[in-house]
Amino acid sequence: MFPAMIFSQGGVELVPFAGYMFGGSVKYSYYYGGYNYAPKLDLKDGLNYGLSILVPVQSLVDVELNWTRMDKVKAIFTTGGYQAWEGDEMYVSTNYFQIGGISKFYNNPNSVAQPFASFSLGATWFDTSPTSDSEFDSYEDVWKFSIMLGLGVKIMFSERVGIMLRGRLMMPMTFSGGGFYVGTGGSGMTIGGWVSPLQGDFNGGLIIRIGGN
Image 1 (cartoon, rainbow, N blue to C red):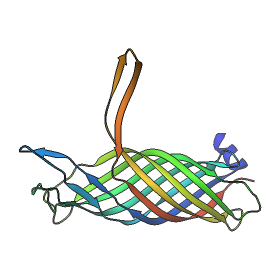
Image 2 (cartoon, one colour; image 1 turned 90 degrees about the vertical axis):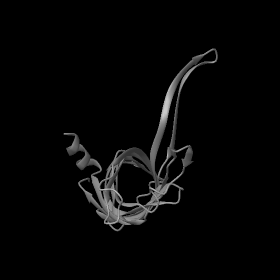
Image 3 (tube, rainbow, N blue to C red; image 1 turned 30 degrees about the horizontal axis):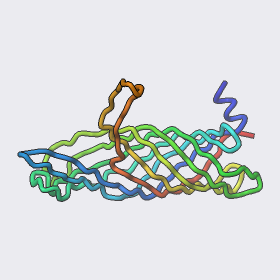
Image 4 (tube, one colour; image 1 turned 30 degrees about the vertical axis):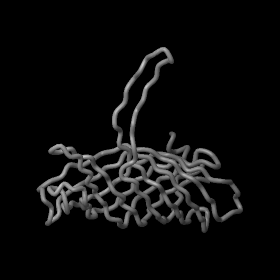
C-alpha cells in the first residue's frame, strides 16, 4: 500500500549518473624500531557512476537512496621514511551506500531549474586487490561510516524527464575511540574521529520520473 501511495502522489525519480571523482589520500602513523613513520597512501582520481532513487515527501524535500562507485584505480604508498612500504601499490574500488535527503531552495512549478542542497550518511567500502607490481598477494578491504554534502540543480525538460547536476564532498570517517566520564562538573561522553580520505566528485545524471499525477 505504501509504495502505491508514493507512485500515485509524487512518483519516484530514478537518476542514473556518471562523473569524475577525486580519490584523496590516507595518512598513517607507523611506529617501528623507535621511530614514528608517516607513510601516505594516495588514491588516484577516476571516473565514477551510480544510481540515485528520489522519493518526494514534501514539496521542497526528497528522500534519496544513493549508490556511487569508482572502479579500481591505483593507490600508491609515498614517502614516509619506511622503506618496506615505499612505492608499494594496490588497486582500490570505492563504493558508497547512502541514505539522506535533497532540500530544494524554492518550489516554483513554472521554473525549469530547481537548485538544491543534499545531505546523506551511510557506509563506504574500499575494495582492495593487488596489482602486478604489488609487494603482497592480498590487501584487506576497509568499511567506514561516511557522510556526504552536496550542491546541485535539477533541470526538468518535461514532467517526466530532466537532468541532475551535482558536486559532492564525500567524507569517510575514522574513529579513534571514545569514553565516558563522571565528575563534579557533570558527566558526558567523548569520541574522537577524522575524515580519511577526503574525497569529492562532480556528476550528471538523467532524471526519469515514474508514477505520480
